[in-house]
Length: 255
Image (cartoon, rainbow, N blue to C red):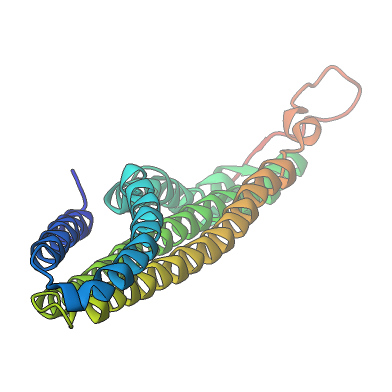
């Protein structure tokens, strides 16, 4: 499903396109009946139009690339939720059952093997809870990235809307011969402002994306550490139940 904020920004981009086309139509119409004494106006307008065309090309290069790769904040939130619901919560439930107070080990079993087994139980619960914590961190990280994407598209809408307002004023000014040069300058200024806002917004998103990348790398390292540091059971002590190896069995029935 397409992000509504992206749809709104795309609608404003279409407004920008219509405003630019309307501006050029008005300028061409106005200049088509410039009297001889005001021919200098045409030269000034032509110089300004060349600058405007460069700005327009730069503007659409930036905008079109963004719409080609809009990001998917909803999907990020969905994946974050799945990390918690399908991994974290389920392992947390298991961890809640793997505790000494919920097991009859100390009641039904005693001796060296029993003690070895009992020593192994708490770390297993701790390990499972560590994975649950990682799942929660993953959701928080993905949600943070999703929020940044949404904030980016809100800012994009503001940038595009700002230019549309500037274009409306420029169109009004271009309806008169003497006002046309100023109108060209106004629309060039509007493009400059919009490009500046878009550029700053992109930089802000990139900065936060770099932060998220560092955060994700840290989470991956935690997952690696959990696997490397997971406490293994002392199978030697736990497994000695033989009565033929010269010593007594480590397995004893409790009272």
